[in-house]
Image 1: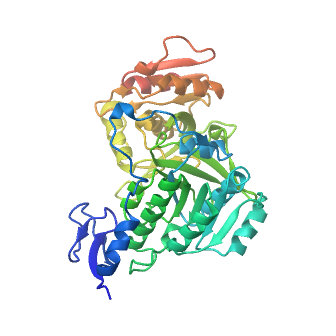
Image 2: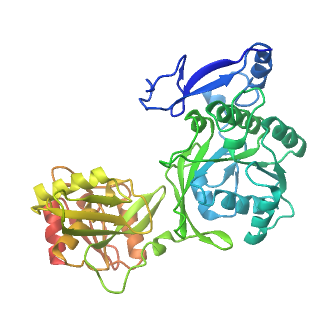
Image 3: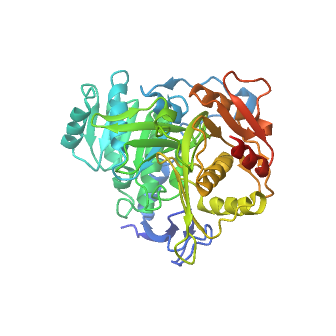
Length: 458
């Protein structure tokens, strides 16, 4: 009998160690090293044969200019927002990893897409967490066509591959990768080694047969994908479905994509009939009151390849304790603290004794710096208890010396605001359009002091 080998692997970066230790020397994470067991001896040959030619069939050596540049055809999922995040559709032989919190709607979204795709191309849906009856009940509730979709309840990767080789599906969905297991790996399903081996086995099958592979993955408590980091390196596209259980809207964000742009954002509304795509997300995030309120302003953020209008709110109030609070929802809290220091130094506003609460409406997470100027405008509006005009849109990056820096795609942002009826825009001078935009008054600024003066004159 082959003797089992024991190794210690970091769950964050995949680094191997001969013994356990508290901190990973590669990624410096604490308590991330777990014991994994493998096999050796008699099974080495079979395992080596299984991973031979991992990325597909072996090919001859070619020079770079001999490689064909024919664009790979895309297969539409039937949802424009889903296709946008995927880079325009599905690519044959690609592996897509979808993550999200429990109840976010991962299985619902995939079931809707695969049921419609099965009408045109063979598809196999493999469930390891639910019974076939549970999936059938969900499909009936969603009202999707179920006649052409093949179903399988299985957790063994070897058995799954045997069925896939016989059925020859063009689309294969595995829900989820954390419950799959490989026979010659002596560890529990969901462990580092099982997730890594199962994903490698399935990805190799997809590459060699041209099958489109969907893997559903769990997330940890901090929102990152569970399992070893090498799992994200194996696949071609990593997407994350975000949204709290009490929120009506879900956002699908591209984290990695070898066939398109990253950080693309697709917006869906959770209804009784499943997830319905929102083709104009700016409209749902701009559901403002009829009367203008202090501390509220609209900014234009750039998500992937399109602009999106989002409302940002700020509340400044006298601190009740000895330490003022700085709370940011949807924004980087450290950047908010930095901008408050810039506002005090270059704007002449003292808010050190004030509690500052900042929120991006709709649950959107803004990571780019174009929200800096809008954030400070909302804080100033709340501090002075003076509402800003509702037809005003603001964007721009604020530097530590108080300068207003330009942001990418500035003119496209202004045009998007004009489409939604905004008539005034406070923007960096470098982003101001050369030709006047009909119905839009552009106010260019170069310093924070100029921006604050312009806000007072509105």
